[in-house]
Length: 182
Image (cartoon, rainbow, N blue to C red; front, side, top):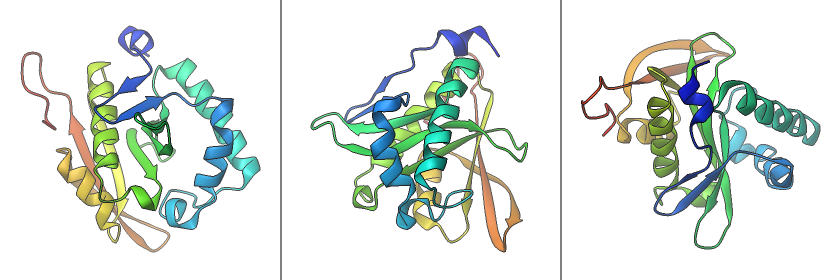
């Protein structure tokens, strides 16, 4: 793990969003989000039980301590409403550090996922991650659109449980160059 990742600020703010590293106070919101088929039906391993969500929260908090990055809880700045999650995690299949996001369906079409995902990618590259990937089901057109809108490029595909999965990547720009997703 590099020093820039450990020293990077962990709370992010965008024009409309606050991205906070998860804590125990976020557990009730996370349980509701991760139990919702409309949100987590597309995610790796699907919907979660309350116990599994509690375990994942503990893992996410530890991941931040060890890696210096992780998943954020996403809130609307104006009213403080919990919108979902977005962040960077090491994929269990060895493909690398991946962007992931899951927001309430009511958030779709408002640009929140794009705004949060762009902030997460920028954080990761600024903190020293050279390559960040994202994986989306071929049928998940909303997520694919977010990924291409923030400048991620298609770089492969694979099959997972009968679904065609598309892989996207964002590469850190060389010093002095514009970011690849700008």
